[in-house]
Amino acid sequence: MSRLAATSVAQAGAGRVHSVFHHCFNITRPDGAWLTVAFMPFPRTPDAIIVETCADGVDAADFYFFPDLEPSLAAEIAPERIAVPDAGIEIALDGAALFDTRRHPFPRAGRGPARATRNLDTARALIRRDGRSCDAPEFRRRAEPALAALAAAIIAGDDTATRAHCEALLGLGIGLTPSGDDILGGIAAGLFLSDEAGEQNRFLPMLLDLLRDDRRTTDVSARSLKLCADGEINDGVFEAARAILFDDEAETKRAVSSLLAIGHTSGTETARGLCLGLRLAEEIFCRRHVGGGN
Image (cartoon, rainbow, N blue to C red; front, top):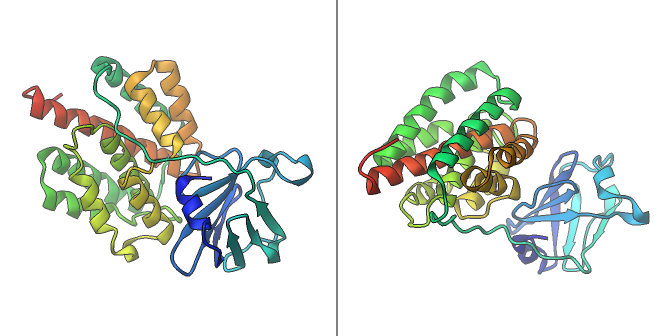
């Protein structure tokens, strides 16, 4: 279980099933604590408990559908177990190992700018070829200009315009994590992971402030974005960023392909935002320290 999940289950309490997917379901408690219960294979994610083995020796990778599990069912949360009695689900937490998704920015020392540029090109080509982006015409009509304007505002350090274009993307699209939010989460991760000097962090507190009004998007997405802006980044995004910045083309393809496989369109839109965030971070660094942009 994640460090955040351990905090959530440390106190016994009642909860409700919030949403159900093939490989995971989400629980919320009356105090607002959030918990994801996921079954392998699943990337290590903030506020998650990942089940690796099931009763009778069944591999958790084979357990991907919950026929009796529905939103609003009562859940029981305790340090030793999580249960949804009406769905016949009980998960023992005895011996659970802790994992931590709090990240630290990558050090600039050791990066190869030319290699990272090539890897970014590789990642973007892979996204175009294999990605599953939101193809709703209304989303594309509104998202493309907002995204271009947001990139320009971030580079220029225009906080007012940055906030306005984030507002245009927040909640845009369909699903529990709208595509606009996935893109913003990728940008936030790219800026955070590239920012050992704290120079890009103006974007992150702005995003957190914007998310104080959760009505702008879904509660699932708002929670995910808040964690990302605070440095809690899931393994899939982290590994893709690490590969792009430090590894070769083959590892970049592997890591980005794994990210693209998350969800229906979420992995693709997050990867798209991550590539943009990494590029923007390098552009800002060059403008401030080298005397020009790329």
